[in-house]
Amino acid sequence: MTYERRKMYNVSHLGLTCADCGAKIEELPFEPKTDRPVYCQKCARNRRRDNPRALR
Ligand SMILES: [Zn+2]
Image: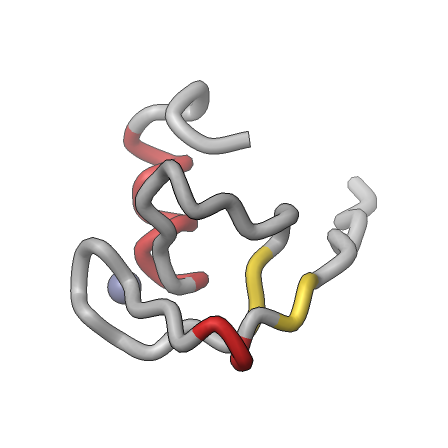
């Protein structure tokens, strides 16, 4: 199996924090949107595993 590395968007200038654990977010695997909560990589991975359709 091949793991495809996703393009990461640098969002450190936006001062975003994880909606789950509150960690500062510097990169996102998707284009940052201000109208939806964002999660750090760890929480995003946990959420994706728990609910695959919750986060593209
Ligand atoms: Zn988090």
